[in-house]
Image (cartoon, rainbow, N blue to C red; front, side, top):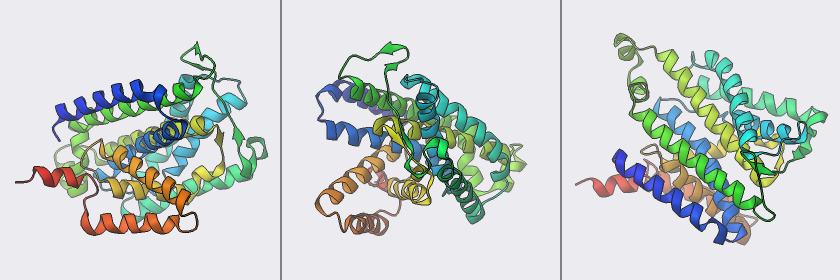
Length: 311
């Protein structure tokens, strides 16, 4: 999809969601909140996949972002959404900048498994940390947005609007990054790292940068989910959470920055209704959905739009 059309769609979706938010039922607002948050996480995974890397450990930064927002409220008494998300960003930047120096040296299954190992280490630490609620986690709440106190009954919409704005900013920023010289190197690195080095670019530096960007997006998504649910717990770092992100990334495809949000919305919709009407077999429904996508749309859901434009 051309860049200008993607930008217009993003802007249109921003205005529609912000305008329709106050009229949405609570269940729909909650589902969209989670979908936008997860889409932000998968947007970062899309960048890694374009670089030829698959992370099974994005739950590490998803959980760190959620806990950073939660600790801001529970330990520091900060209930401002903007500050909580800034805390999520700061923590994920600091951790990913360090771990990225190591992970940038690895490829293929080694990168995937090492990222998973770090995520499981965090899970183990949180489970053993009673000050952070151990296996139960702890709750959080919001009271303001960027210093503006929330009127009674508007907290849900404030969280929803924050998720919409963050998702819009993340998608627009990713679109511009992918159009930049450094962003275009992602596909080149996936195809042939040696040629990229011959061109004078540092493969390790680009991978490190892309890894940090993906971590920040995962942290923002985790912070938003924690604020949306009002609770954080160690399960956010467990391998099954990271597996769900990989599921959505494969479901979505990497053709456009809109794809992760489309995939996350469909995933959350299928899972919610499957769990509601078939609580004992909802995993089967998700599995069948994935199987159908792999068989008929091996390039992900976004390939539907690509095929339509192919003469």
